[in-house]
Length: 268
Image 1: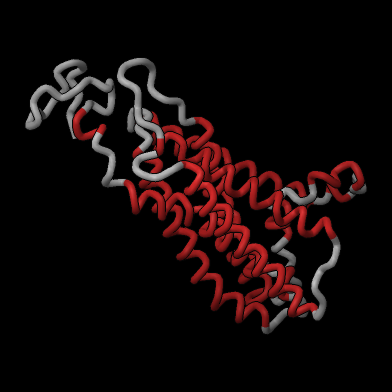
Image 2: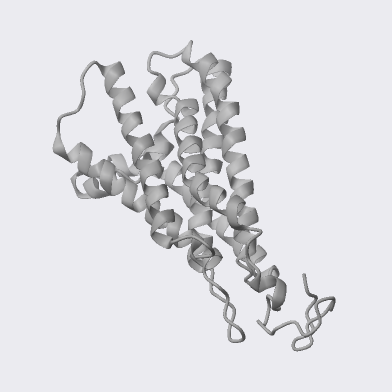
């Protein structure tokens, strides 16, 4: 890592998520009137923090590892898949907002559009074999799964295309992280007033699409907060790319050179 121990970054991200998650559980328990005493709740919180932090670290690996001179470009497939998952979450959240507003405010029908958020969380997967098969054939379930898969696919295709254009440059992940973070904040702020309006016309706020969008956009922003802060702090501290060609890794012979003397690519 450039100037900071790897374990410190992992620890900060882990504690950041664990504190927020525990605060969320405590807040929900306060509204419910009782604090959860089941051990599995705390096991799930800890496991979620490990998965959350681990995926952040995997996303940051190309940015925190000094490039190697020559050889094949670094594969960023895993990073594209992770970024597509976050982008898909924001897309699903926006779709839930639109569906919620149309259903509740315009048509006056029951709002159950938080359902895709429950599917996106993957909490149902461990209980898949205990679910009645009839529920898996419901139009809402099939439609939600189809839209989620479509969102992941589109984001994966677009991001992989952009990575190829940028010659597998890990620096693009930094710009992508910042844009996704901005998108999560915008979606969160958009969902707040709409949720207030929707909540006034529904009996259960937790089933509304606007509430589901609030949760998805908040979690996406929290996930991106770790990489985003890291990039803000260290994006200007990578002297290797200033003294080497980022495409082939060849050292710059002349500081003012505009093109790499080895591969002919434009130096940045």
